[in-house]
Image (cartoon, rainbow, N blue to C red):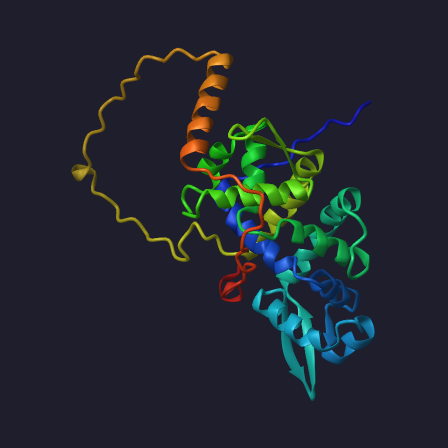
Length: 295
C-alpha cells in the first residue's frame, strides 16, 4: 500500500517575519553545534569544557555564547570560579529542527564548506533563507499552488512593509540562484514557482515555525492585549439582518488568466524595475530583546 503524500503547512504570511527572526537566531554558525554539545553533556558545561568539544571556536566562543544567551537559547551562571553554560527550554526545543533541516540540506545542498556534522548542515540550510522576506516570498508562492507574477507576490509580501518593489526581484533572484524558485515567461511577464527543493523546504520551515511560535514574540500582536470594556445590553445597537447581494458570475479560467497577465504587465511597467544585479543587503536580523519576552 502506497504511503499518502502530505502537503506541508503554509502558514499565515503575517507570521513570516516571526519565522525569519527564528532563522536568524538559530542559523548563526556553530549555534546548533553548541546546543548539541550541551545536550550531550547533560545540558550543562563549564565554558572551558568547550575547548575540548569545539576547539575550532577559539576566541569566537565568548561572542557566540553571548548572542545565544540574548536569543534565549542558553543561560550562563557562576559555579565557584568557573562560568557554566546551560541549555534553556528554548535551546533544547531548538534541537528538534535539526533532523528535518539536515535531511533537506543533505538532499539539496552540497557538503558544507565550513564545519562538520549535522550542525554545519543546519547552519548552511538556514543561511540560504536568512534574508529579509525570504520566508514570506516562499510561502506566498506556495500558497498559490501555481506560478505567480512578481506583482502578485508583492501584494502578499511587501505591501504592508514599504520597501521598494525592486527589492522583491532581488530576493527572487537570490532564491532562484539557491535553487528554491524557478522563473518562466519573458521580460515584463516573468512568473515564479517553487522548485522541488523549494517545495520540500516547507517541511523544515514548519519545524522552525513551531519553535518560533513558542519562543519568539509575535510581532503582529502587542505584548499585552487590551481588555475590551463590556457594553451594556441596553446600549448595544440593533444589528440589522444581513442581506446577501446577488452572486456574481464566476469568470472562466481563461478570463482569470488574461486578467492576471494584464494586471502583471501594468504593474511591471509602472512600478517594478527588474534587475538581477546584487543589491545592498540589510544586516542580518537580530533578536533584540527576545530573551525578555520569550514564553
